Amino acid sequence: MYTLEAQDISKSYGGVRALDRAAIAVRPGSVHALLGENGAGKSTLVKIMTGAIRPDSGVLRLDGADVRFASTADAFRQGVGVVSQELSLFPHLSVLANMFPMREPRRGPFVDRREMLRLAVPILDELGLEVDPMVPVSRLPLAERQLVEIGKALVTKPRVLLLDEPTSALESGATDRLLHILRVLRSQDVAVVFVSHILEEVMSVCDEITVLRDGVVVTAGEDVGAHTVESVVSAMIGDRPRVVVRPSGRALAEQAVATTTSGLRVDGVTLHRTVQDVSFAVEPGEIVGLAGLAGSGPAELLRALAGIESPVRGTISLPGGIKAPHGQRAHIAAGVAYVSGDRRRLGLMLDKPVWENVVQVRTMAMGKDGAFLRVPGLVTRAGEHMSRLNIRASSPEATAGSLSGGNQQKVVLAKWLDNTPSTIVLDDPTRGVDIGAKAEIHGLLGDLAAAGAVVVLRSTDLEELVAVCERVIVLYRGRICAELRGDGLSTSALLQLMNTGELAPEGSQAPAS
Image (cartoon, rainbow, N blue to C red; front, side, top):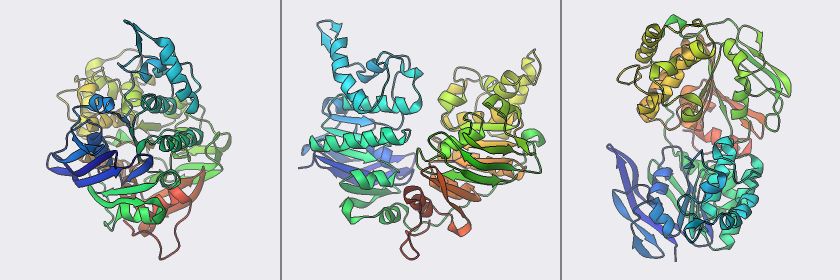
């Protein structure tokens, strides 16, 4: 008997069908991979199976009986746990408190902290999270917060556990420990649904595979032994034609980017524990992508380009032949902008007005407008950026937190363009934004390149890399394994290279997208 089943699940948002009669059935004691490209419907199906949202139609069954979860808390009470890609932690509470949100064991009317520690510490040890359980979560880096999120689910000893990209922020050691725990859960007859873009993980730990493409199941519960990385890529991609985004042609103000005659140079750069002997160049007017699995180097390399990390060996030269200085502030002064997709933590002051966010780099941080703030002029300047980037807000005085995700991300871009950068490095800049805002951001990147900027883009959305970039540099285990361009640049080729470090032989590759 299946522990958890979803049958004929359909869900639409504003006329866009996210799921079309999708189905998955998970056995006790198995790890079932749920795969698909970004936007294929994986997270929507996970949310339906855990009570976060309601389907438009379809049936959920738990142990063979029809069930309708009123909420994630209701699903949890019935033994269905979830680890979401978007963390649901309370940053100002301790690690221990976050492990038992609103379900602390009690001794009479009092919280039983000793029992909490007894249950939580072994889980934290298994995950390799060597932190004081009483430390606030806000002090932990993203990878350790991800482990707390996983530990919070494991401590409940669920009968069904759904994991939505649980290793996306983890280094290889922590990932290995999590995969070991999945094997232990399987031996304890827990039914596990595992969502991951890292196909090597899928092939090593999963028993069955279900693949979604555009909301439709194209591979239903097939034995993992019947597949290779190439066959899974083929199922995920299908034969969709490649989509190319053209620059919008919208004129940028001349001061939006500083143009130079020479580009960015990376020569023999090695970073601690990740990147090994990497060299490449990006010329003014180019958009170059960086691709690779979590921990293989692209995100860390971007941080080095922004001055957040320093190379152990090798050199970075900025446009104009400037040797990269030390520290992020010096990089900003030298014309580097670092646009993070984590806008809520690294990009914005959500409780401040839009205008104050837009002028944060040039005026507040770099002090280019003098010691005395002339607020009316700053508000006007911010309004010009809002118009140029089509930022939809009632006025520059609206708080950044009141804007939609896409408009928030455009505010992040505006604050960097306000400082007239010559080099723009972007780390997953359209993460969590809707398709319309994504298209506008893509058009803006084309305009920035056309105006002479050096643009380097890392994205977890492979279709975005194919659509926006002239060429993509692929890293595998910290080293460049390929550079794709032209007809050779496809999502299928990227997936294969990221997961194996090489392309399948001619004639056996998945269809190009």
